[in-house]
Image 1 (tube, helix red, strand yellow):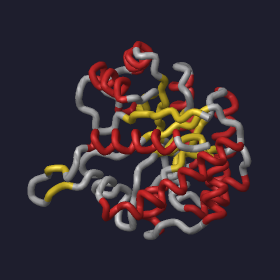
Image 2 (cartoon, rainbow, N blue to C red):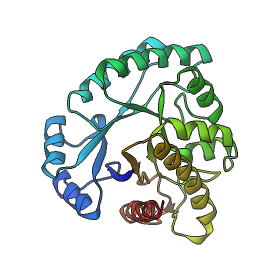
Image 3 (cartoon, helix red, strand yellow):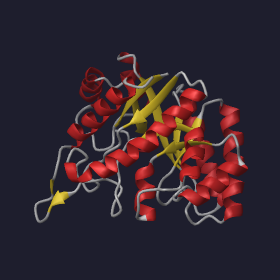
Image 4 (cartoon, rainbow, N blue to C red):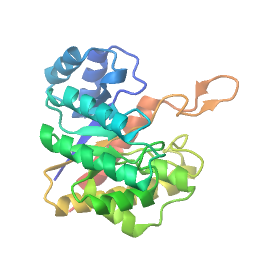
Length: 270
């Protein structure tokens, strides 16, 4: 199994042509981007990615208060990006306010849409979304065996206000994981100020154990590759010095450090 590093565009302000060339030279093999927040139209964005023989993972963000509104939003965005042949689709889907029955109704419809377009879809474990905590995620996964995840455990560490010890749920999620967002969270936030600092090594180690579980499950399932995005964000996700709004670290350096660290760790696997 191959590890395919992916670079997100959240916080990228330089021209995409320059940024993509830099990311490609750094070793990233794909770009993850939402068309809603892209600085370029879809056609030009895809053209720039293909120039460098890279792949792309679109992010979609469903909206609406009702299940019907969420499903319609999901359908429109999935159909819009599917025609550009993405590697997979990462969806911020559903609402944390959904009841258990509403969640079932939404994901039943989402799976039908996924089957119709023929593109794998990963639903992200994210605050404000249906999968904002481990327990609702477990329940929905058990109901729908074909449902897949983008695992971003940094959100769960914050929501649960502890490092996760739900081994059965983590193993279930590993078996369903299509894509990893390799950000490191802690009890008081979804992003430690700097994962390179020794005071956050405990959190780095914990997240890496969970990613190892995912890699083991993907390898066992015969996956050809595993995708990983070091999704550390810009200010205000990236903490700042009070009164100055100056970031405590470089977002680009942290993302690159995380990517290179996980590539090196993956290379040591049997």
